[in-house]
Amino acid sequence: MNIVIRKLVLLEEMLPNLELIRQLSPQLEAAGYRAMLADMIPHNYFQVGAYADGECIAVSGYWIATKLYSGKYLEIDNFVVDKAFCGKAVGKQLLDWMLQEARDNNCNMAMLDAYVENFKAHHFYYREGFIARGFHYLKQL
Image (cartoon, rainbow, N blue to C red; front, side, top):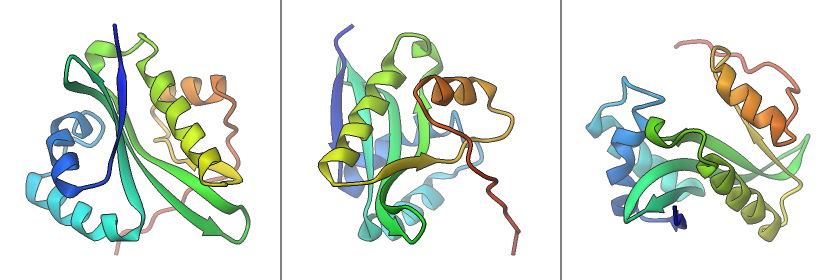
């Protein structure tokens, strides 16, 4: 399978990925997705897609920013591989692209959150050299 990895910068390039992202976040509505992207893109948000035969089969958002504890970093956000393509190294290709993007942008590290119940993701990230460093706390407002 020939995979093409593409960086997505424009809202119009990201909008078609909603159904794929819904595999991770099924509650996401089209209007909300559009509104959130419009809010995120001006703040250094991008997506990267893995394409096979012109179809996006994996996607991830990412941010490049700086924090006091880490310095400049790339944060992986909503990493999704279509269920039909899991186990075919598509996720590794997408992750490798993002790690190179981090290096190209002089980032000190890559970081991400993974749902506590997403054991397949935990296994994948551990295998790729990520460590669990802390807890991510939420409070609904």
